[in-house]
Amino acid sequence: MDWFTSSDYWLTRLVFQRGLAALYLIAFVVAANQGRALIGERGLTPVPRFTAQMPFRRSPSLFHLHFSDRFFTGCAWLGAALAAAVVAGAADQVPLWAAMLMWLVLWLLYLSIVNVGQVWYGFGWESLLLETGFLAVFLGNARTAPPVLVLWLLRWLLFRVEFGAGLIKIRGDRCWRQLTCLYFHHETQPMPGPLSWFFHRLPRPLHRVEVAANHVAQLAVPFALFTPQPVASVAGGVIVVTQLWLVASGNFSWLNWVTILLALAAVDGRRAARALGLPEPPPLTGPPVWYEALVLAATVLVVVLSYWPARNLVSGSQLMNYSFNPLHLVNTYGAFGSVNRARFEVVIQGTDEPVPAPDAVWKEYEFRGKPGDVRRMPRQFAPYHLRLDWMMWFAGISPAYARSWFGPLVTKLLEGDRATLKLLRVCPFPDAPPTHIRARLFLYRFTTWSELRATGAWWHRTLIREFLPPVALDRPDRQPSRPGGPDGRGGDGVGR
Image (cartoon, rainbow, N blue to C red):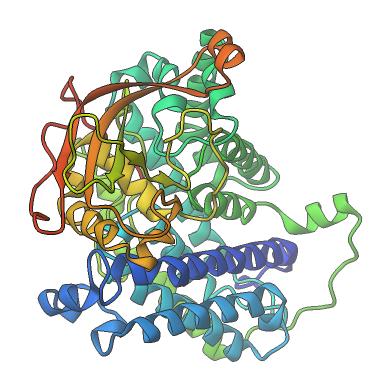
């Protein structure tokens, strides 16, 4: 079918597939490095306990059939190796059916991880990676021209990501309508990056311009994705620029990078290749009939499943980052429906004194990404995802977010569990675990220019209250106190 494929998008597909495989690689490495401590047999929320309560039909996963730490880690490294091979171009060197099988295995392996990942994998970018990865199965390889239907499905996905995020803002916190949300967001976002302090200190009129530009990029530009070229390419380029702005201003795992790849999928590859001075590709063959049938079937499936997210977009009670099926296909997306006005951080401390007296010396555990030491400049980790650090941000909003895992985390620290300590940047007890652990809630704010020059501190913090009273291994059952903050204000579950 001449209408079925378009060789104009050969460069588009090449960049999209290699980039997506790179993100798969990062996601699998994250799972391999953090899985044992978070969801392993002795993890904070063990998979065997979860699968014993959750039926397979509600969370289809390879790990319902068998789970061990070694098996899970092996699957994660297998996914990483396969993703690395695709990044290197292996999928373009094999027959079409083999390339599709490689992409399918990547999707199935990561689906298996997400569906047993519990709170640690409850973020919107997990579903976004899976939905994008599913469509990549049907995008073909260098042996055939890209199918037009799949290219349109990628645009439909990008539209839902951007337009859904725009709607949830306009319908949510009034500061988005008043153009004032960025007075707070760069400071209170889950994990600030090295430039977040500087973004926060931009003049307020510029913050208002940022919000207005965001509304245009998310509420108007997505409609141009469905227009003829070169307008669709321009729309994709605008989205890329706005996503790069977000990459520079914070750490949002691979959310922005998947969105960038989806936006690039709307760009006319032939025009881009000519602009870059790249040679024309060799003539691409027509697709086999079986491939056309699979693409048509996948298209029909996505169209049918699109009913629920499309209805959600026009609903007055819009859901954010929600999967309507256990395969995470055709989801709804959005982030920051509300913005916190203040930043509360849970700081975990330990002491090695047998009985902690009022003058006891308490030493702090330092996390890799979340704010702790006020003199430590925020780091850039995205697209790598620090799952425990992100959940600690939710704990600062309300202990309810930490009910299932904070107690086990404290127990692991009291035991000096090596897998758990590897998730941290600094353990203040390198020789023996502490006798007691406590947690305190602090109000953090970015310092001013004068404070930064005078003290070298990026943050100023104020003690609010006790979050968890001192506990020892013989009293591990004590719970964090409530509520989440003095003003009772919660967050919106960004990315969740």
